[in-house]
Image (cartoon, rainbow, N blue to C red):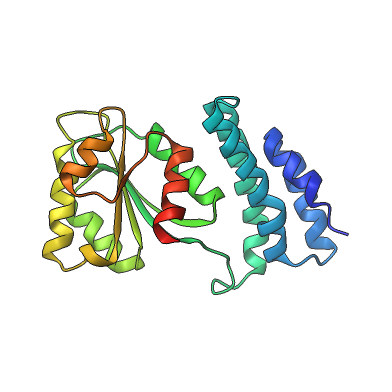
Length: 210
């Protein structure tokens, strides 16, 4: 019997070593690798996301949990064909052109990955054309853009316009976030959603693709 409960708990505690030991033990016992991810690794991170949103867990703890989960997934990945790897969808994420802040973006990436999304992280200072290229290349369903500077926020609108020009706007959802960004601003530029924090971003992506 696979010990999914203990694996969940090890993720919640952010215990990288324990997650590796438990995951490897399941692999050695021939537990279905997709089940290890779906029942052992992802649910634990789901609890972390809920606690983070509720304010009972903080960024450093979430990052420890996310690293532990990633270590488990890295062990399981070689046993799963790409076509069998469970995914909730593909999200292209980047900090907008002119902006170099990435702590919030990195946290969003972790929460998305822990919710089963495939994340394509473009990095920081990303031009509208680079977002467009990534959507085409990875057949992404969602773009997530972040900004921390009020002076760069309008580049979010420029990216949406670039998607329209390329005829891609109808097939990709756009979400935005970052300290100066608001729900009202998201609506003004024609984004599909706004997330004030990483946990909300993951929930928003699930809703948009439901």
